[in-house]
Length: 198
Image (cartoon, rainbow, N blue to C red):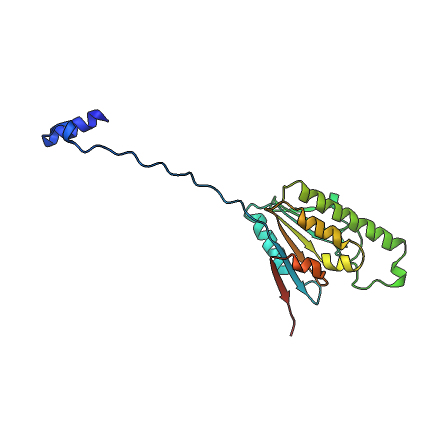
């Protein structure tokens, strides 16, 4: 650098001592990344099956690099279960319980038999899997489809869901969909979207 100053000074006919000195730049604090804060979002409606926007958003997030888990608690018919997840985009895991059909909104007396116990077991396995995946802190977003109805049908405990929300990793988004979301859970939401039909 001194050689460069000397050459420039000689070209202009002045001495290196009369050149203006270079000043050091002041030290600045390094930039700090802000930790992302996950949200609790609720998408509710009076009717079932109206949340395709949530599912497409989950797919979009996975395509952009987020780790996403979608769990449809009352949608059977493909006999998945926790070990039969469908993986999309390499980052989206889609689960349904290992049952043969979808569970209706109202359970009849005949449905309280062995089949009902089988359905309860399949949904509990799915619920336990979701809680485990959330505790592992490897998810950016988790979608719990028709969780409110699963609670109202007695398949999942409301307090268990509240505990899951309270103990989730702070950066993970939890999205709850479906009718019959309990009022205590609604109070915990950062965002509530209600779909209405006119």
